[in-house]
Image (cartoon, rainbow, N blue to C red; front, side, top):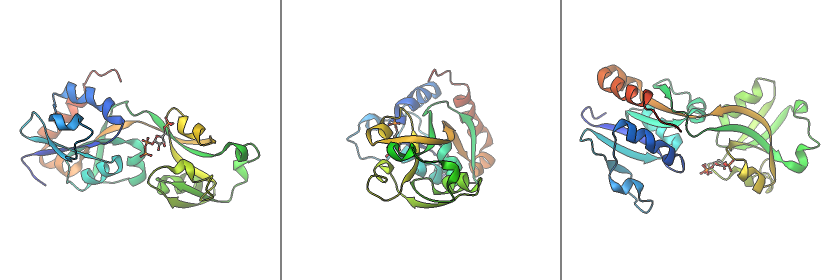
Length: 219
Ligand code: PRP
C-alpha cells in the first residue's frame, strides 16, 4: 500500500451523479477526465496532491479497498453484505444509491405461485451468497447461476425462473415482464475504509470519515 498517496475507489455508472455533492463537500475535485464518459483513464488525479481516484465497478470498489489497493471507497450495502469482507469498515451511510435487493419472476407465473411451497429453486443473480442465505433461512435450497448484469432476461430465456437483483424505479422489471415477489434488503451507498489504513494512518483516515459524515448533502 502506498503510504503517501491515498487511493479513493469510486463506483462507475449512474451513482456517480449522487456521489458528486459529497466530493464537493469534502473538497475533492477530480481532474476533468473524470466527468468525460469518453475518457478511458481509470486512475485520475484530484486537486489534492495526496489523493487519486480510481473508477471501478461497485463490486470491485469493495475488493480494491478490502485488499488495501485502495484506502477508501464508496459502494453499496448490497455489495458489502455479499462479500462480507472483514478488512472493510463502513462508518458512514451516505443515503444515496437508494434501492432494494429483491426476488423477481415472470408476472404470469407469480400469479399462480406460492413462494411458501418452494423447497429447491434456481436463481440467476449477481448475489449468490446473499441469495443462498436469504432462502436457507427458511429451509429453501437456492441453486444460483452467477450473472454480471442483465439478469432480467434470464427467465424468458429459460436460464432460471427466478432472479435476485437490484430494483430502483422498477422500470427494468416491468419492461421485461417481471414482478417483485420478495424483498431481501434495502440498499444504500456507504463510505468504506480499509481497516489497516485506519490503524496505520488513524488521523488522516478519521479526517476523511468526518468530512463525509458531516457533509451536509441533501441527496
Ligand atoms: C441496475 C439493476 C437493474 C436496474 C434496476 O442495473 O441491476 O437492472 O438497475 O433499476 P430500475 O428498477 O430503476 O429499472 P444498472 O443499470 O445499474 O446496470 P448493471 O446491469 O450493469 O448493474
